[in-house]
Image (cartoon, helix red, strand yellow):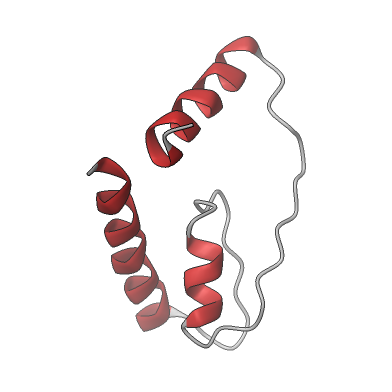
Length: 73
């Protein structure tokens, strides 16, 4: 399934982040799926900060398509 591939990919990305992380870190543009996996991997609780919500029609459509693919909504 496609969603399972995304979760497996997120796990690999977390392993890469963990291997390169220092005492203080920030992730920019990280996938939403990474946050709980990072927390489960022993990183301090992750905080999501939204600077600007997507408001262009293409941005909104892209986000909806991503949710549809990942979560089969």
